Image (cartoon, rainbow over all chains, first blue to last red; front, top):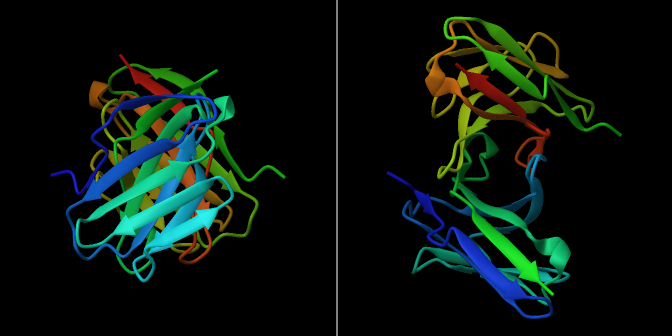
Amino acid sequence: DQQVKQNSPSLSVQEGRISILNCDYTNSMFDYFLWYKKYPAEGPTFLISISSIKDKNEDGRFTVFLNKSAKHLSLHIVPSQPGDSAVYFCAASVSYNTDKLIFGTGTRLQVFP
Amino acid sequence: NAGVTQTPKFRVLKTGQSMTLLCAQDMNHEYMYWYRQDPGMGLRLIHYSVGEGTTAKGEVPDGYNVSRLKKQNFLLGLESAAPSQTSVYFCASSARDTEAFFGQGTRLTVV
């Protein structure tokens, strides 16, 4: 039973355009959400997070939106750059318990010139 | 600044062999974790530790043991390796209730 789902295994976007990566969750107790980026042969690196008391969090080109009623979050990257090409994982937890992070399966983003 | 360092980076084991994966962090983090990543699946938590001398089971602990004798080190052991344990293993560390920092991973193949 996948509690955190990333239904798009891959996404291809032209440089300069917006990339939108989606994530759905089933556990209504989740209240802390994170996005990680992973390059090949490297470990995941933290990108941005959002708590359930907010519906938007922005950091430079990256914005995460949370829709609690739909149990859906999305990561927007504007403008997309070739260096953004990576696998993106969303993760969720209950009450900021990072020892209970549940990860999605990842979406591979390719940004082409 | 090394962050989280995992050794080895690659390893091939025969079924039934044992090995220990080493993880070291230099950020003075209390929490440390071991995850595995398999194709088509997200990272799944094997074991974790919330402080020196403590360990706890994660989502997929069977077939693995861990030890946290020193705050900066977290060891993952496979007593009798099985082909199902072929995976990429990631160690991570974090301060309390903050984002985790990951190592580069260990690619383990069990034949």
